[in-house]
Image (tube, rainbow over the protein chains, first blue to last red):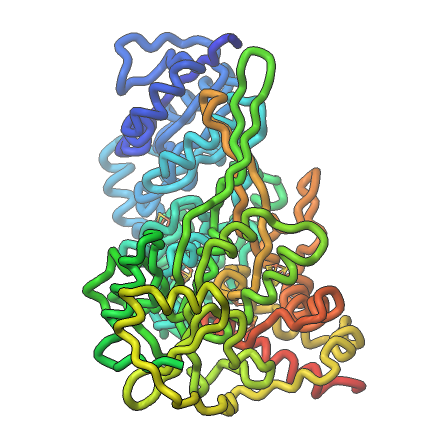
Length: 264
Length: 341
Ligand code: SF4
Ligand code: SF4
Ligand code: SF4
Ligand code: SF4
Ligand code: SF4
């Protein structure tokens, strides 16, 4: 048998719910342990030595210089780095702080004399990320799909299929047609369209697909759902660490040029 | 010809589901949000069976499921054992509409008769009994089946026509004939010499398909493609609800232990980059214009050349599900309008 891969699981600012999702699927988790050694995980291990890793799985957004430095160190000693969940992928709800008023920001950051950055960051704003396990929280099947491919020496392919595909697989009626807002057409799928299927709308918690037609969706949200520009911006702000449509378009363009999030 | 009294419809379906072969009966029902789709009768006995109008989703999933295991492989000491998987569940689909029946006839042409038979589709097709319901009028404002002849039921085992007293029941195959003669079923039916009226309605959404392959061939570079495709979201809703779309890709799902690795056939869509992605991340049909043109031309041009049938059966579903109101009939009208200009 091949030598086991050394894995470390790290948490920055987050609820650690994504990490929990990994352990929750106990069947897959125990199978995974035949192929990997978890050498670092605050949640399940007492001793967490700083050793070189085959795979670093990193959850959480980066809030301070200290966290950023730690992340750089993890990157330096890991062959592969997987971003786990939306906090790591975009900043998630912590990043909503980025859009507070200057006065409020000053009070909670400067006056509190915290070490915190003024802007909450995603991992890929600081280090290179190899693969993304997306979602708030992640989907366990999606995560194990990525891990299995890596263990089998394959490259996890990018899954740039909109949430709508899985939404239709579940035979849902489309919210947009009924005039209810939904970001499914521009959101990375892989979540089984769980929110729409359970009666809510898609808030694009898994991120916005690099070459998706954001402008056209904006028109639908305006014409069919009667949303104002401000409301549309708020929808994109919830999970994607952007002020609104203009910034999300810029972000996905930059990612396209840097060939970022090409995989998983 | 038999008569099935209105009040006996449920008894008829009950009798079908109690037949000795233990076939699963699939019926069109409605979700709480209003969506009409097909599901197992056994699990939905309290629900109303929807026999009028178009179903939002066709029963395509019973022939081409979103994901289907077609093989699995197991690694032992020094060999790999590959097992093919064929679905052999037997079913009755009750209430399938003429458009969706015609779509199955098109799929048979492509997936069974043309070049390489798709064993999985063929097995599912063979194992399914089709009980159709005639449409007596256009089901909504977007369908255009009457201009394609797909408003006439074909290829069914049994067909029901609604009349005042209930339904006229006729057989379309030996399987259907035998089924109607089964004890539990025969006693619900009465013999009658009434005949169903000729189906002769016209849909509101008019389409002219005369020499359509020539029209589309000539207008391959028409500006209409770009004009219409610009707003496409690549959401794939249209190809997914289309009863005659069949594209799939095959992927291997690896297990942690080599025992459980599976080969899966998954439905795809020509609106996705992934559809035409090859090595080095190169996508050769990347623009929305080319993607939409593929969708329309496959429906009305390539299928005619290759399979001598129009792929589209005019159900109008792709029109109704498109969030940006891209409309296959309007596109063809527009191209005809621009033709030669
Ligand atoms: S409800 Fe949302 S996710 Fe579902 S098809 Fe419509 S836009 Fe897409
Ligand atoms: S449906 Fe949208 S919001 Fe819900 S999990 Fe999927 S990507 Fe996230
Ligand atoms: S192309 Fe549209 S109208 Fe034609 S069969 Fe498919 S969904 Fe129905
Ligand atoms: S190429 Fe497109 S239109 Fe044709 S069957 Fe495939 S998905 Fe449907
Ligand atoms: S449903 Fe409309 S927006 Fe979605 S892929 Fe089809 S044509 Fe494009």
